[in-house]
Length: 252
Image 1 (cartoon, one colour):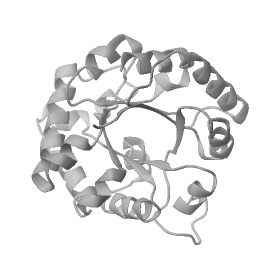
Image 2 (cartoon, helix red, strand yellow; image 1 turned 90 degrees about the horizontal axis):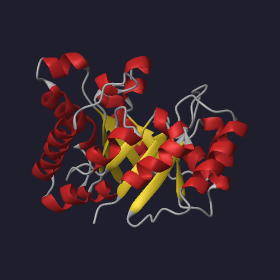
Image 3 (cartoon, helix red, strand yellow; image 1 turned 90 degrees about the vertical axis):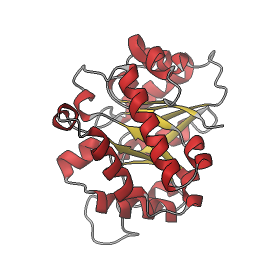
């Protein structure tokens, strides 16, 4: 049975002391929630990963990195390797986020290398993809998503998919206040699952968790999460508030 997941991407927010406070608040707020088959993941900024990882060690909260470099090591100033992430207790990495694609020029080809590097180091991957508004308006959204998945992931062996979580994020709904309707989210998630099944098999497709990312809030989470092929959310702004984040966990 595939897991339900609520993952909070903190992006470039929270100092060390603020991160510690937020972790304490999240721990407290989820104490009474039954987390049956549900995973809670948070992704602080690099400089706070070690402290946050230590502070969540005996809790239900898992810690992810927001990105990593595709090389083992070397002269890549400002970059972080998979081995470095593992050395501070991090076992999950987010790859392919739309902000990395847009602001830092990350291509499908580069992301395929990052995926390979993460798998080589036995890191679990939350792999992001999704269309911009023009693609949606021109009805190219299915083609764009198919291309992003095929180019970055379809070279993998079937056995690699146990390390993958997929995250569909319509770029037009990130930080804009716009949200795909529950029906739009379900339509795309079902398309993604069928795409994986057609390349691999239905067992892999049925077992991979597919998250929705795009302005999920306590007010709309329950309806979105209730859809058959939506297995949770990759959360941005609402993950920075313990009450909102715990409300999303309750919603799932």
